[in-house]
Image 1 (spheres, rainbow, N blue to C red):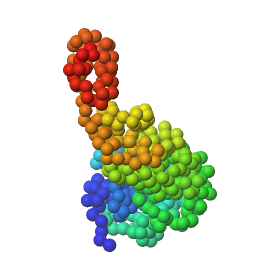
Image 2 (image 1 turned 120 degrees about the vertical axis):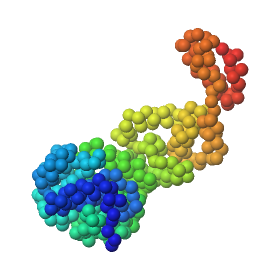
Image 3 (image 1 turned 120 degrees about the horizontal axis):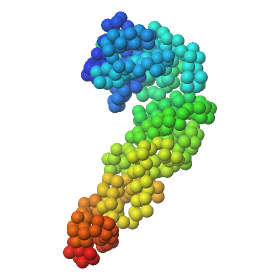
Image 4 (image 1 turned 90 degrees about the horizontal axis):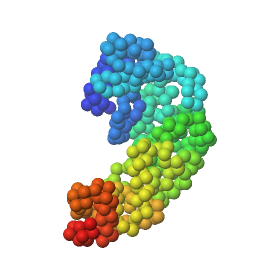
Length: 384
């Protein structure tokens, strides 16, 4: 295989950091999600590095270079480094001596095979050097080429080592657009055995994984698998395959980027506050309030603007198993382009009372809306 151009693919920062560690006669590789996503044609942001240097050795290098780093996870071999304005995670090769479901007793290693064996999935156990050459200790590249989601070794053992791997499994199905052919058939049964162990995972970690599933371009297969493993109901509520398919259909038809508010409301997700930021909660409330005004689509377009009004229309259609017509879309567009002919300043100029002007503005706007935007500015002024 032709070497990867590390500087071009992963950036000059990653290349320079690898080079810096290599200069100290230590091995260092790009590993995990960034490398996997590169081969699968998916976007990546975070770049993780793995090294045969122990944390104390890497810290010594970083201090010598005057680099910022966070060593709070160094007992697990991980350092978070700021290098050339980018952040990297550098983890020393290690092997798990004893695991406890989310934590582990570890031992640092100089052997890349030890490090590969303790990882979760085969396509996450491939390493790339500064020169762009792949190191594949477990012969995992075939799984990567075929997009096979396969646990390293025994699935039962891998899951018991870290129960968060259950949700990572479903998240990777969603984010990598995998289907049933990409997944070992017995995995859902194995996962089902340990679903109650998710209780020991923090709510924040669970919400983070589920949120990433919900925001995937098409999470249909992943959500179906969650239902089959009897996990969906516990965290997301009532499963409705028809709603999921309808939502994805409308998003594709109108070329919409997935947003959490639209998906949470369309699928009637349980405890949505677990997933939403303050800003997202505010938008959710605005959409819920507007769902009661679906008979006045021009009004909806005017009040919300086309994009938000379209979200409302889709949520309503998904929930009630409805179609969306071209006429409805046109009503939203027409309403969104309307401009109320009077302004607060023009009304206040006549009344010279800000409180009264505000009340009158709302009153006149409602008259204008009820007239289907037909009352002219002249006629509206007569109501003053």
